[in-house]
Image (cartoon, rainbow, N blue to C red; front, side, top):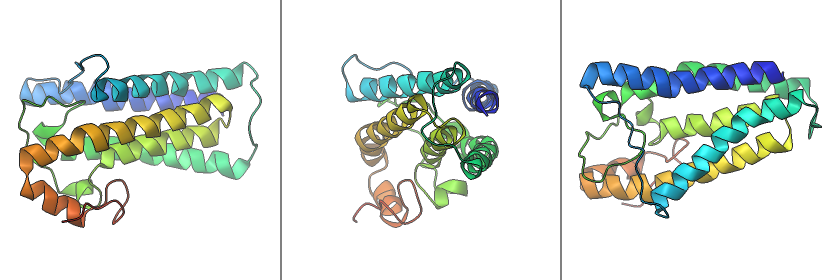
Length: 198
């Protein structure tokens, strides 16, 4: 399972960052990557947590290959992990493509992008971040060791920081009432859960 997990994780990163950045640059002339963040800022901490999660995502299957004991052993969990990661491979380009020219990694407060509310964003406001959390959960099911568990914790922390403290304030600032109305009817990470009060 460790080799399968490593292959899935690598493929997901190539699709989510490499292919999407290339596709976005061809369409808009811009990579969509906004990696700058003032050291110590909220956005910097979110990016640091996500970078640590990515390291853990690669380290978990390597640790399993080197003999780290599993927290549990279940064929059903492995099958569920493969199913989740397979769905993520299809869902990532769909969600990123739905954002069209508004797709970004990170936030530049000086930019004004269109508010995307269709496609998977009709169901949840942060479809890509929902997929990120699912990927790390799938990794834990495939290689259930402490490193994978740490990766899931770090990924969820990074997503929460980025969404609640960086992106939502930016979107409220940029789109005002339009975002407020959208957030009042659409869940944050899962449908109907985490809607903002009107």
